Amino acid sequence: MKAIQFLGLFLLSAIPKLHAGEACFQQFFLPCEKEIVSIQNEDLNGDDRQDILLFYVDEEAHARWCDLYFQNENGFNAMPTQTFHIPEDVSLFDFGDIDPHVGREFLTFAHGALFYHTLSDSGISQERKRFLETKSLFIYPDRSRIRAWNFARDFNNDGADDIFIPKFDGAALWLHDAPTNTWRENDLQLLPQSRTFAYFDPRFSVGDKAGALFEVPYMLVDDFNNDALTDIIAIYKDSINVFAQQANRQFAPQPSYVLPINHGDIWNGSKIMRTHLDDKNERQFLIRLVDIDGDGVLDIVTSSISTKHSLINPETTTSVFLGRKSEEKGYYFTEEVDYIIEPDGTQMVIDIRDFNRDGRQAFIIPTIKIGATSIIKMLLTRSIDFDAQLFLFQSGRGYSKEAQRKISMNVNFSFRGGAASPIYEIADFNGDGLLDVLASADEEMLLIYYGDKKRTINSTPGARYKIILPQDGTLVKAEDLNNDGRADIILNYEPGKLQMAGMSNGLFVLLGCRDE
Image (cartoon, one colour):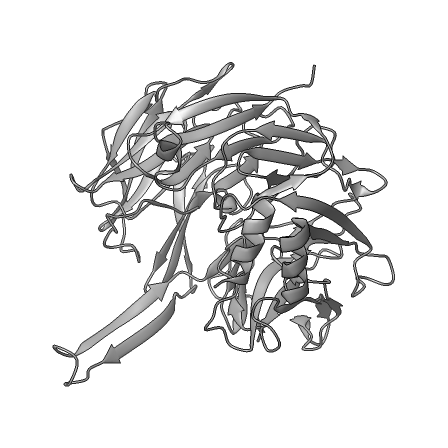
């Protein structure tokens, strides 16, 4: 059994002892005919409001669809503006502005070409236009899924969206000059990562099999060399390849910098860190590439999980390797760790934010201790201690191993529910410029722990909101959807969760409002 599943069960079913005021939200329900397989929120019509697309699959008809909900000044309508059929040959999609005369477009990779559909107040045009013939990695679609990937964006920071096309032998970046509406191809020796396999056992197999998996490496668009120009950074397991932007707004065709690294696997982006019965004694992951100390040079953040002494309560540490520059070596990372963070307990999430707005990143790491003693205590008292530990960067000293601040929550719990993971989001929910924490209690209660200038985050909830919650807390997302400076909430659900409560399939959107 997964240790994090214990965490989710106790946290999602927790009932705080302290009272909190009612949070102010406008509640909207967006119905969807089938199980939602993915959600996309984008400002599609340029009104500074995020619109929502719900993607789903009709397995009987072998068709993929999306319901488009435009947001207006009053929120969201009860029914979608449009139900759009996804062409069957589409592998990936994105939204971008590649035609300066018609606003944003719905862009798709299909076999041998990149296509686009124009957008209007009535939704996505059914007419598909060919933008470019190209041989990309994305040849065949997975008709059981609908995937978004950010391949249309402003790579060189000139105000116009560009197009990134990964290939088997490199990549092509099509740079858009908006004033002249012209495109130029920028070839990059940015190779895919590959993994081959072959196997055959005449006793147990019907025949030989071989294959290869080709993937785009993890990519980051950031200023790597501190020259005020964005660069393209490809992150492989053994190296970081940087394609620096040049004065002509193009990127170097060959890597400008190649930095060897050895920090284990690259974290796949999952929010919750889990342990499994078949885990090795210790695993290490490269978590983030981010400027930690505000010196303009990117740094490496890694995390290790050890189940050597306990599978239920694994030991976890976070390490920081500062990026450096010298005339002799150029840009490099040392093999020796600069800072080690050792939270007291098992970490669930690693959030890296500038909490006190000093230009340096802080770590907030929620932790919990699970063991025989704590389990007996929970059974006897129906209470559990949960800590959100804060590690701030201190001038001249950096990070200490121990947290400068612990936000302790002693909560009661019931035996109802059984979450796969807790609800945990960080955003500004009241528009005061400070970061707050969104958590949950019981099966129908959201809690907001407000930020505090002196204490960073209050240890008692300042607001609550009653609504049915998913068992998997990662289905909840906080983001400012209406550009009012207050975070809003999207609540998606597991298949059948709402139907069991006597409701139709869909999701809830909570738009924050000003307290009366």
